[in-house]
Image 1: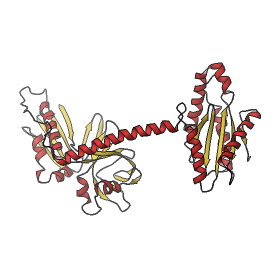
Image 2: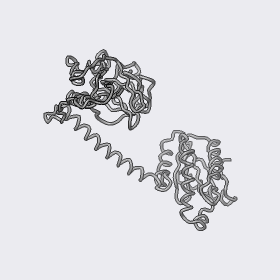
Image 3: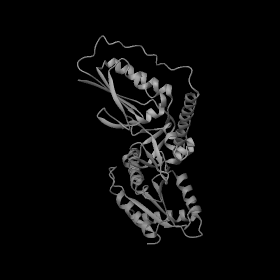
Image 4: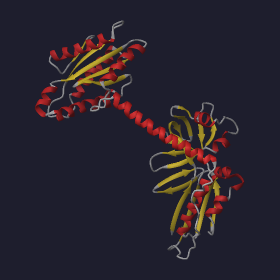
Length: 393
């Protein structure tokens, strides 16, 4: 027995990809951190109410879980909290595109699939058509079925979901046509395959041209945004360590002082002990390895803490900014960093650091706070290195 499965979409994605930030099963609560209904209201001006299902049916969502897995879902209803009930599950973290149904594009896709099926030379074809797709076509609901089953024995039905297994993956599809072509033995050599004219019609409807225009503009904007994001990242981060550079961390310190309601912020400044000796003994490559090991620790274990930022101050010096914290938390963080960095094994030499810890004093200038933490750092060095020097403990 030889089996060929196919599914037909034909829906055209438009606009930016959006991320599903909160969903549970078939209920999508948030898209890009906002109520899911906002997408339909903002981009399509589709109102809540009894006509929502039919209006939204014309703009289903293409769900992309990974590079290989895409399928269609359509909205069924809106809940009072702005969440949207979809036709089936939409995984949290997946990306979606709004799509629209261009009848010419859909039937062109159907003809291409029909040609593939006839080349397979089946003895029987099983067709499962989505009820939502029938609603889309209205009084022309049989046009796709007639095209697929042309000159073939067929049977099937319409359903609210179409299940197909392909490449070891079973998917529940919506707004699609799933076909299962079957035959016993080899394909017939005498099968007649009529030539299909599937090239794009030059008399393209205005909706299709508008969609092409929107997608082209969107792609160009996304490219420009990606370039801008890369430029901003390079301008604000240290190239070697990927931490914030001095200009950015210093600017953030001043901004915290201006915006923090309690003015309750702390600075931790540390220096890698005997770093010049490492460079002189083992070379600058070894020194770079140490800097990366330290920065990787900070990125993975310190920068992930709420209200904590870290940057490279210069050379082997690093600055950490804590806002809305406490004396105890600031000191414990400094002790933890000092002990954990000592355990990093990225060099022939033992990595140790000296840390200064200070708290911003009410009414003092930011520059004075920075100066004091620098002095505390050098006090830690004078006391023997590999330790914390804190003004309030």
